[in-house]
Length: 493
Image 1 (cartoon, one colour):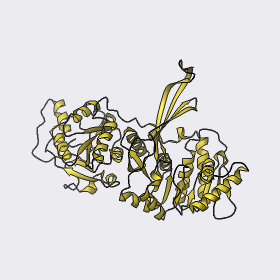
Image 2 (image 1 turned 60 degrees about the horizontal axis):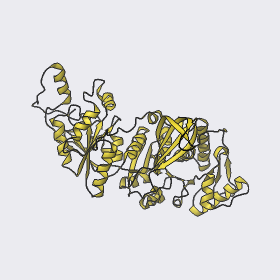
Image 3 (image 1 turned 30 degrees about the vertical axis):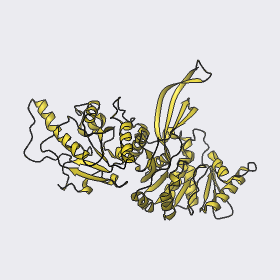
Image 4 (image 1 turned 90 degrees about the vertical axis):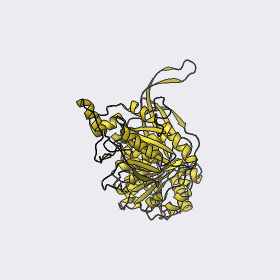
């Protein structure tokens, strides 16, 4: 593969709520579900991207994310799965699908997030990404990403093979795609094939009509447990049977099929070979237990987004609200990050300098678990709750976002700040951007990284050592490296 597999489409936040039903509601004849567990995962295009990354492919996802806690959660889940997130701005709320389940069966699905909203335009980096892809998968869930004019122009111009997984509420595929992958119901709705008649004949008529209308190279109609029917330039369709017969949760099977086909085409497979691989992957996916068992362990185990604990300036909702307000006014969003364990004058100087660069300052704060993983089991000295409140109390800080990962990359992919600030000098002594670990992430949306001066001799590590040794920490006369090669971006350790 010469470039990444690029997935383009709408991402939703899916939540499975598991529980038990032992009684009916006293005021209406409906079952009462006592929740025992719940799990979040990316849905839509995000799920297809996670599946592709789990197969070892380099995957970049172009999607729209809202400035809310759901958008922050999605970005963390996607980053944990190894997906590079290229986010378009999205007004409104993150779309969510909540499935209430008991004994493996869905009792009710609750959708929220409102109607579809048109996403903002892509940055030039997104267009270059599509042009250099090894293959592109458009995973359309009818919420607007596949309609974005600049994206459609880039998809029509790319030389990479394009797989289009359509939605009846979505737009037509761009002309010249390599493969479309509707299911039976979708192809009937998209082509208005009359009901009745032999199943395969109906699927073939619909596939041929769709292929001609979209000027697609091929259309593969997925047939559930019976495999897929491939219609291409020849007069006779190819029927690919499923290698195993399986019953189970089929949620996500279409995404697994489309992502497998995209990976195969990226490797140079023929379309017929790609469809055969996709049928085998989707069949094994359902037989293996579906989405509940197919997600990578790092995604299943990712802790939830840290809430604000009642403080209006702490948490994903607070940060998202600040960012949305500043962007709506045409302002500049600035962010910085780190552990900020034992807040001292060096930290404050860095934060004040950062705030002067724009119209708001969001601090990305390493959680207790993140600090312990980076600095050892005896850190942090101050809990994340207290560290958050101290930072939020500073006049130069507009919001604090706590993250659990070793680096702030997921938080940055969601916040998309215009400027990311680091305190102190780095490897070259001059703060050259290529040496900053976050610089590549910022380039996805045209953001910039900068370094601001620090106060010599201020060090959390020295403060802790002095306190434990009964001594007193004093400012040194020589310069001190404040950021090191740690990804925490703490101003002065």
